[in-house]
View 1: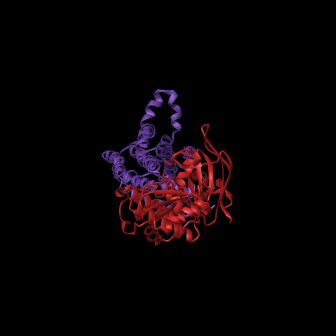
View 2: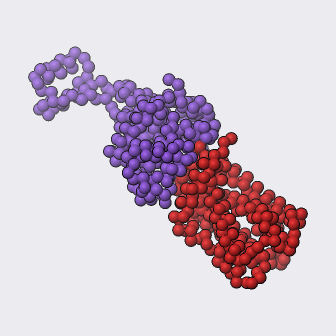
View 3: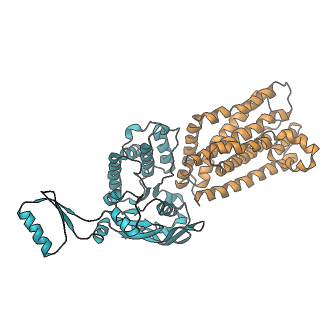
Length: 282
Length: 236
């Protein structure tokens, strides 16, 4: 797969403090790539470097095959969209007026406003003044603004952080549809369930370093202890690993109709993160 | 390099809608016209009386409005969105200056009509106004880029109001304190002297040094704006 983002040996230092240290990864065209880590791990710094808002101290960061310092031309700016935690809206204007400005800036027809708002479940609210919106609605308007020009590459920094589960679900569906049309998505989150649901591959970032990088399923398998928990009808739960003895036990319980449920003991991405870094994901 | 009038106009349109809903700004805008009214009470006011309100327009509308709309973009984190959009530095700066420019021209014309100011050579004075407006636009942009909020921008504007807004009054001080003689080269003083000379029949051959000085201030300030804006694009 061709890479749309290439990062190698990336280092970023702020006032003698290393925010990123020897970060390496590629993101392929059409991929949903999750960049996961707790607050302060370097996720936003990486997005800022990849969108040309920060210069790397050392190493290489390329997007669309060009160094990120070359991204400030209108040609490249039309090819990507960014939603970060410091994106803002014009509070005295309506949702429609906010988005209309960006339609003009990106040279896209005004009808895209309806489509983008539909995707974030706000189509009926477009006349509302931004200052009257809840935090979750603001986040959805910002996301709609990012989607207006249907970018080839989307950088989303905690896109569903302020949203309720129903709206998060709606946005996940929209992102999947967008991805199916070919948009590559670079997603930072500390919501491991979101990452498992959406991402083709994830990188776990801790203290400015990528600790693990793989498909969520592969990571879970890698860190799995290959056991299953069997819950019996009498309330007991037994943990079985592989091998003839475990198979015999399982067979006996099943023949005797004692099995109520069977669970695999694969760890979640959150469990893996804690195991690798010793830190909670907050 | 591309230049999109659509993007410039989009920013102008957005600013117009936004400013008209901003009570803090809309209530400040008519203040200089009070001075035009004061000048109109004199049946034959000197040029300096007209320039009381003109200099106030340049500070309180051109520099203040410009700094306020830029500072508010920073305060509300909306400038970053513009910087990350396909709009170039020049398109953003022009778009953000267009509203201030229009408000300045309209207020000067309304104020001149009220105070009865009729330049002896309209075109020459208009060119001097144009150069001065560029200077104050750039000054306002610079203040907006350096401050974090609209309130901070208005506080920073106070000393500028004293130097440039009421600057014509300090010509009296220059005569008394020689060390202040460098202020004669300030754009507001040059504009006033140019207007006074034009009123007594001076032509382009007589006033070109003043025009050049005002233009030089504008160019220096514009270059500073470009440098600072480019730095602000990077979030270091």
